[in-house]
Image (cartoon, rainbow, N blue to C red; front, side):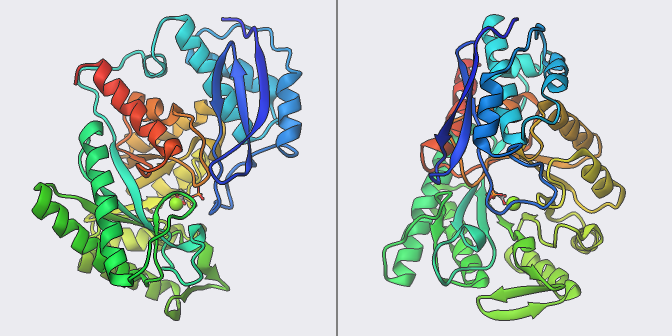
Length: 391
Ligand code: 2PG
Ligand code: MG
């Protein structure tokens, strides 16, 4: 396939911030953006979004792209001239155009060997109550995300997560005696401290079980690099400074007390050894996940595996930009028994590419709330795939 029409323009993401939209042969893709970003993420743009937009609009790429691996030609052409956000939007739109030209779905192009009757769908992991860097409440929990997940049937799981969200809102409203607002990724805001929110999550778990006979698991994104200052974990609500050892003990205690099944970025993004201690301490009872730690960067994933730091990994395509790299990261992670979680960013667009990536490459989870058009675009894409396969 020749790239006959390639263009780009600036659009606004769900936070109202500028991002890039790329069009290739009439197929569109756009990039999300993070707020609690990892230090080792690739730069989103080479010299700002406008520079990258101009580069794409002036591209003169003449080679044909006929399969996923041919993205390499494109990556050689754009080498170091665009940022990761632009690379993701460009590659995703090229692949959508290629899939269309071959009469295929994107997931089929991404994994020609997939068995669509048997391939599993990812479980939807939804931020339900939010704190940390995503909160604009003055007083808020220090942990960034209180997550839930149920099963791997997209249609049912969407309904359960939506239901749990409404129920969590009612619980918070009754306890706080005020209207509950949403944060920038549509999670519910509260002024409660971490443990109080975990109590709410426990109540939520019981309510959903009693009313719907469904079990939901509880997860956390601690996003601890955001409050790791001068070698200590500086909590504000309530105020306390924890050493690294105390942080490991604190998280391990919470995992036990609240039966938490998933904890992301419990330690600072530099502390592979701290992650390894926590993993050892929790004896595989909980998914100890890296996000800022690994930043979808193959070299950092190799270190994490070597140091036995994690048993789960967040994959955010725009942390690295190249979908060839994203695929390598997922393959390496799976080969080493890590659970794979493909994730949205806090600033999102209606792009649904990560739905196809998650299904095609066998991700165990997709991390996204089920509220708002930008997040639903991903969930609804999975449901569309599910329906098209008659499953
Ligand atoms: C995270 C994400 C998504 P951001 O930390 O996991 O919630 O946040 O996109 O701001 O990095
Ligand atoms: Mg995170």
